[in-house]
Length: 287
Length: 313
Image (cartoon, rainbow over all chains, first blue to last red):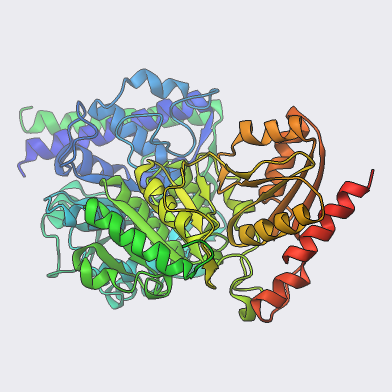
């Protein structure tokens, strides 16, 4: 990937963060921490990797994206709106009665949403079923999943993981957004999943651990899937919760953010600063 | 042949095999449960369309959901409580809320796993699945309607829960019986009481009706094989025309067929009702016929209950 392409993607990631802030501004609250930690993952997927067509959201040969950690939905809405699945004005309805962007995604309300998630520990088995159906159809499509690290305490995930390995679902690619925090505190202190990579490996998966905010690394890693022949792949993405907001990064209390006016102003300034840095980089390479 | 005893699981499994020959989208998922569900021959006949998962029912519901999103028609049969009570949230969110075309079949339902005790009895399955919007609940009462219910369920697009028993059950209907989802069957007309049965104990209601007729009680005998959506017209006409309803089911009184009918009639046309089923308790264990007798579900007991109900003015 050349530098121009990469910078454009970084700019897109910024736009996703701006969309998330737009949603939060409308709803005055939301699960911001885990949405912001997975912005680069969704940017890489929706703007580089996924075979999708916003004009044909039900295209049978599309790649699927399942947000198992449904509370991260702000980033999904942000990505789908940016990619043109629906008008960005929908984002301004967040929090209002009958909004098409509820607090957890609803496939019946918007194009591009594959599953109704929210209760944790559902997405992986649904994704496994999609991957199995796609294989039966001999389709080249892939199924991508984003899970939270706190979500891994749900035992249903490990049933799903066993079955994915047993059925050799090498078209299934899971990201664990390892931002290390959940509502009650650091995930390893609440219910440790360590050693995480070994755990997945022992369940029969190919595993990589990467910097989950590095777009180039994310894309390069996905291109190497399946990491092992006939095995599903998991990418453990090390991330920072609430990435991009100076006052909230790495803080448990911003898992669910009830906004205050001064914080919203600071958030805008933080994103403006990111934009300034990106513009300087772009000028540096003549964009 | 009428009154011939047949294995409900074989009737179910054979019907799935028939349907799978016609419809290539049908796939069967097993939680170590296919062979016990009458589907023992399916893997050999359709090796690419049978998926074994081992004992992980909640995960199988999720996999079935995912398969359905790709146009497959997943059929998942296992012991009734393990596909309803255990994975309730998966049923609700992945099948109900997502409106996926998955067919879940609870076998050995009710008290038919007689000796195995309350962990394996399923007296709450209708109650809990009935709360999920959009799910069709089918509870056929004889081998002929089990087969017809399977074909109707496969043709219907949307999530379904079907329940079947375990011991052999008598054939009650001729092969050409008109079976339609959501439409009850009036087995015989009568004027003194509407006796409404479902599922495994429909045959007990049929026998009770005969005893009642012999005692001079005229019975309108109704089979409600589809508990959801309920046949409102048939039930409300019985309420209006007869005014007395007795329900018979191998299920808790809370939330089952009687409960559904009481909900309907109390809103639309209140009538006197008696519900026969299992009250708020963990059922005992023992030989099936004795066990259902403990809860008043044998024909002579049903007859006595109906007569007492009619005499209680």
